[in-house]
Length: 412
Ligand SMILES: Nc1ncnc2c1ncn2[C@@H]1O[C@H](COP(=O)(O)OP(=O)(O)OP(=O)(O)O)[C@@H](O)[C@H]1O
Ligand SMILES: [Mg+2]
Image (cartoon, rainbow, N blue to C red; front, side, top):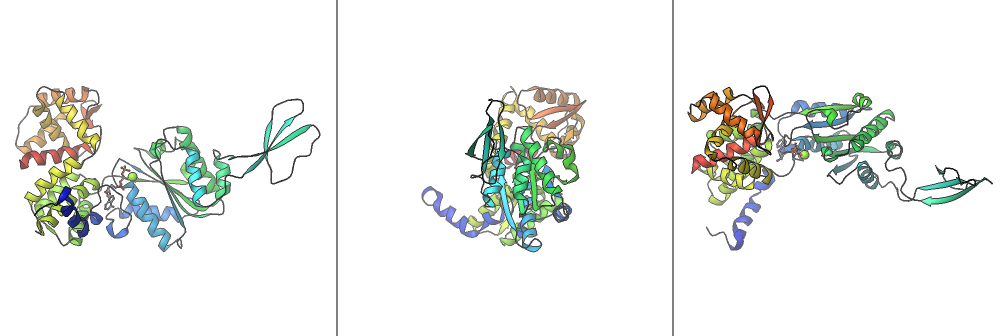
């Protein structure tokens, strides 16, 4: 079949088929019918939100499904329990601060923040000036002069913001709070949560971010722990990844072979992004070929497309690390062996076992050790040492990427 100018014809058929609404590697799930697994975390989330004075912090590694859990659960909650209360979402980036986050919620709730009046007074003797917010009227004092100033006051004050939000209800989702580099901003957010909790506010805060511990995201604010309950998201189980694959293909009336399902589950290693990415590429190929059966051959091509579509950060660090060695192929094998390890931290011995079992290669532990030390010693390397004799991937998504590359090599 011809792809038409610029591949438009192919693209039109793919769009029409709806495969990109089922497999969504680049956007979070926001609909319960596309959300799988996570039963335990979702029920904890629901019960926390429905408890007076409690707010939620969702944290975990990059790409485990934090935003999807938060958005999907909030939507269901608002529809079914909270009677359609207001839903506000703020995605932070490095330019955000406590003030910009506060501004977002005030704006969405239509709380006028621009015309707050303060009166600045100064003693006639020229001593230190003070600011007193007034509800109107001038301060009558013969020794003081007063000037009315209209400006955005107290946006940086958690207690002022909490006061404005006191009577409101709904959910305010603050995503990617790890992007807030200033600890002071995270601390203020934690203070805001504490104040809303003390005031028994019906506006619930849900914070989401990448972190290995919850306190990384709240700048270790001690008293917030009582009212900000943590939901830690780990990788999904293989069974849940299989649910994403099987349900997705079923919706599209496509039939993957058992081998394809097993391989995609293995490559994904509990990260739903990769299951969505590879399945999307398989599903697109199936739409174009008109063959509903997704076989190993389809998967090989899909892996190639998936590698091309992967984040540049992964592609670049993998390539530049291997190309910094004279014999990249030897290092590639070691990295592949490491990517088969089921635990985040691994030893040269574990790599040896996996190379034996998975690619029938017998490599001495000392050789693996030397290569690993060299990779871990490279600035900007993809593997780092994390303890005596133990190593780990710098980016937890790298093992899945390495396995996809291996799949492409194997299919050549
Ligand atoms: N429970 C789920 N069921 C089905 N697909 C999911 C689920 N959770 C996440 N996904 C899919 O996995 C991918 C990553 O999800 P999401 O964006 O929610 O992760 P994240 O942890 O917020 O990522 P990041 O750390 O980059 O912000 C998306 O493609 C999303 O569609
Ligand atoms: Mg996210």
